[in-house]
Length: 265
Ligand code: SAM
Image (cartoon, rainbow, N blue to C red; front, top):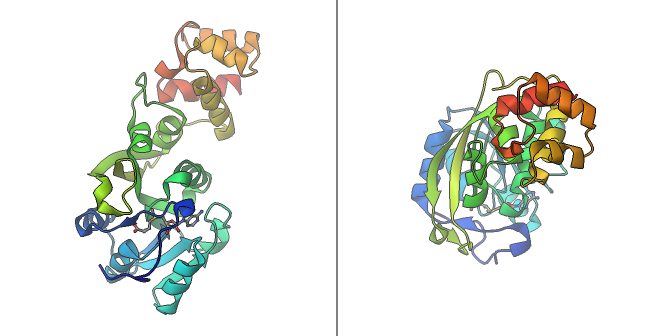
């Protein structure tokens, strides 16, 4: 892999762990299944390990990079197929900068902001088709988790409701420079044509899921009361859905969460 800036010192505050394993890059590309001319968003192109291969595969790439030096080096290459957006991807105006959806999102994410990126993706779901993203393994485990398991949490419910999530490849620390302290995993997210569990009000589902997982060890009823839901409403909703008040919230399926969110409003 050619290096964009041979003297660049990786910046920890930007979560810079650069991929240096061509076989991992190829697995990411294979999962993305690009066709020439397809629009792709990359978050954090860094030294260009993925970006180069996306461009070589004929993708039209919009890349968000917060590191000025790296963004400038990419821009100096004057690639017609590449648009570099300098700045924090979390603060960027995606609808304005991504005017021609759908985009595939392909990225080795900075791990310190990966959950926030996922929430932003959920907020802007119509912009995206397939996602192929690298996470630290613990976050990946949560995204793949089933109900009633240790890893099942807010992101499992909210993401799996809209995307079918599968593992592409596990990635060892030695595949990066510098090696992170944790293992990593690449996941493939395929948008579902319809959500697993339709909800009337997505904000209500988010609120409910946050309440349920904020107090994992409490019973569902106590957890919901602790989060500010009214006792009468909770009792009525649980009875209507035949959910035992004493169960733990983390055992609820995504469909049960969605129904409960609808009942509670
Ligand atoms: N894609 C490259 C690779 O695989 O080698 C670099 C991946 S590195 C894990 C994360 C990249 O995201 C870095 O280039 C970093 O500067 C960039 N980054 C970190 N925080 C960012 C943010 N808030 N917005 C945009 N880019 C960010």
